Image (cartoon, rainbow, N blue to C red; front, side, top):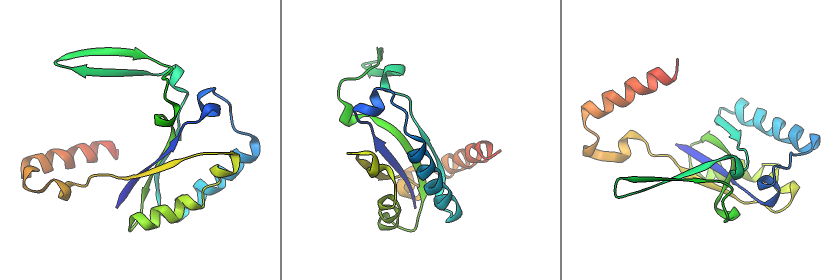
Length: 139
């Protein structure tokens, strides 16, 4: 099972405050543990929303909204992609994360869809297209 683990933004991340050397070292060690265990598929920190944009689509129209965005609780400051046997295993890994040591934080875990989740609607042709795309991405 694959999971996206999203680190929610807070006032410090939205202000662009960089973590201390101690936090960076702790996160580096945590990421190494994830990688050695075969759990980590990827992950990055994100710049504040002031450096981003949102695109809103409605009735064929697209509106671009420049950051910053008002509701900090709904923003993502970083993410990991995990591969674990279960949601509980992903939870157990996140509980070991050093992030809470820097103050109040929230982390959300969401399972990714897999091809089999789509049932018959995911036709053999669509499966083949997906496999070609994944092969291209792995090169």
